[in-house]
Image (cartoon, rainbow, N blue to C red; front, side, top):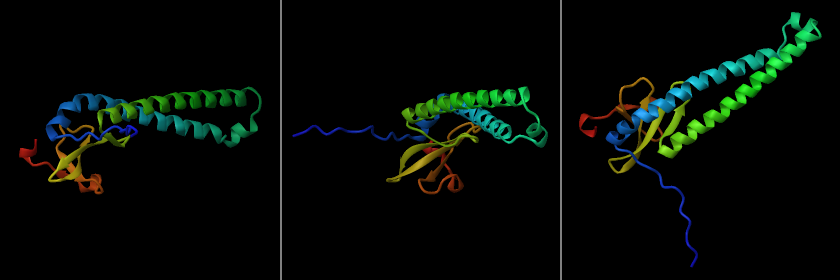
Length: 150
């Protein structure tokens, strides 16, 4: 009989466990939100450089070469940033948490509550993991955790 390969098991958190992990998650999410904003700015810069203005369209020579070099540099920076972002997201996944919004810093911690899977929900800037929502409800369905659940 062949040995069955088992994949990684899903981690479930209690509110206390999620809050204990929050200092590390908070640092990673801070890096993610800062990088997400920087990547958006770089992407906009690349898009602007790709659309020359009327004046730039009339210019030739050195100005055009400078613009091409600037675009290539911005694209390289963007790609390095994307690679860093992938690393941050992988780090969160290894911890067992799910990133829901790069710009807001919204995180879900899987939780088993009242016989069903739900998510404990935390957003950057909140002092603790104090909310939860149904798996299919998302942020709009957030509810405050009861005190005794902490």
